[in-house]
Image (cartoon, rainbow, N blue to C red; front, side, top):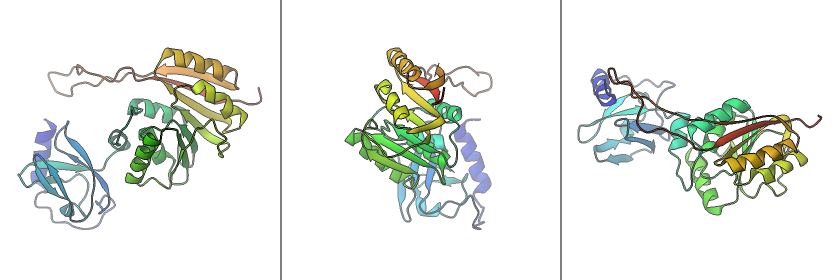
Length: 282
């Protein structure tokens, strides 16, 4: 069954549901919601009272969504049916406003998994870019953690700031237009993430200034092998151990009975991830 047919089918099941009781899964006036027409047409929308969302398949009255449960099916002004979902962290990350290449979910998820980032963690991210990874990190460290983001490009800083505000993450993210190689104020954080053109020049500062705590993880993202080689040498001479470099490839398959096979396109090489632990007393 295609997604479009599924939406049509469940819509008929819920069409006459008049239950308006407030529940934890209820859509609120300022929520970010994912509006889905099919597998290719998906929009992340910030609801505001009396707003309308316009598509070539008709207009959706956002006011009518407020108070309903996520997972409902609605009908546009042209009679087309849409699915209303609560966006996942992946959705939020991929839907950020972009001004540069972003770290994709396959790499972001490995960074979070490998470094153990969780609630309460303090994380330094240098090379924020558009803020796609920042958005993911902020959701994992909340409510009491903090992301300290550094970006040297004013244009990218403004875009990242806009995304952080759009996703209501200001309390979790302290974003600065600053070079991490300058004397930044944070010390003894749990994880440092470097998405820089020359991370090998920053790694010594991470150790010398105790930006990363003893036993904390450092992660770097680099597109080329020459960058990785220089990074590895810098790690080995700066008090880092348990070094590992990996590349992740992601291939999705067509989920259809009788033609279950890989899609012809895939997310191939995006970059190399390098991880290391700071051990200061060896």
